[in-house]
Length: 531
Image (cartoon, rainbow, N blue to C red; front, top):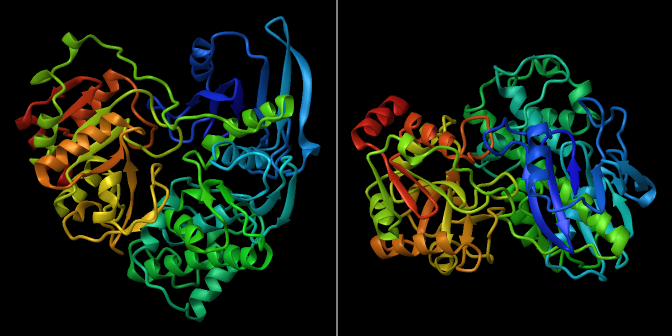
């Protein structure tokens, strides 16, 4: 059993080389980026069949920033000097205790979940808030640090959004995890090109600053035209594009000069959620293959430390796993307590018909997804065939109108609708859209953050998409996460029903049951939200 302290806290269990579960503290409508809570520990113990042979702990820091005093295993450290292997007494039993660095947790997670076989060398890229480094890992899992193209890449990426946002305060130490994702959406509005002198000055000042959250107050830029300019101004959108390109170019130039063996590359850290950058690595031609896990951010750290502990004690660093390794859905209320217009047995053709009519439906199946992206088990689904649906979904989600909505698509439909660079089961790459028939999921630059689905990965969603294709001619739907604003995925029936009523959904599916809501009531709610 392995624990990840700090934000994106989670607990995972590995048994005989298999990921049994990974339970994330933010899921079940807890605050986003939540730390491990007593409630999460209790639920993990309930799902653990016996006392674990090993308790593993990912390294972390005791304060706000990674440079604070370290815990066991430490935040930084790529070699095995940071590994701790002891025997400790837990609940009256002698248990092996293992700890290793946060940095190594990223490397081991991305490799453990990758398709690459153990025993052959590979490259690793860890780029997150504080770490921005390349490594070479040999067949025995010895990690060699190749170099650090940029310190604090994730923090420096998000810093630009704060600089332009009038609601972000001046002063040191402020940070918002969600800013990076918003900047990724805004950068798509800019065009490629060469920054002018002022744009270059702002970008260079940010990229050259060490420990940027602790040392560079946004008030430093008060005389810049970009200070509090507003995040939706055209000038800022262009600067966002140049800033994003500049960060990627730092890493790409370094890789081109120093990673010359053509080995496979595994990517981890929060910057691995940037679909544009992932696509660029894949297209770079520098690597035999590229793999990004669905929990590439800190939501995979406990998995990485568990994989390293397994390697330490058994010699194996590989895990069998499913992206649907979260917790099962909780039916915490009786159906008689739920006020719905109709409760019906699931009929996929009925759902497809309602979606084609413009309904927004919550879709819940099985266990929730590991990582931050809804992949068809805790999703809001809708038709992608009208531009208006993009606006409605962002209104339902209570988020900015510039945010894109992702498509979930039959794998066999991808070639017809998108420029296909291969399967994309975890929504980690951008694809260019080849048709104007799906405007709700086509971003301003003509791209989409695609999830492709085959019958083996998710048979329930595959069957629904097939029914929607039979009804409309398109095997693709809008897919966005099922969550209250500022919380993780919904994972219990009482929260789901409240969400559906408060946000004007037309219905929701849980397993084999379709709960249809009162259309007149929801139409009124939709008008209120859009207004």
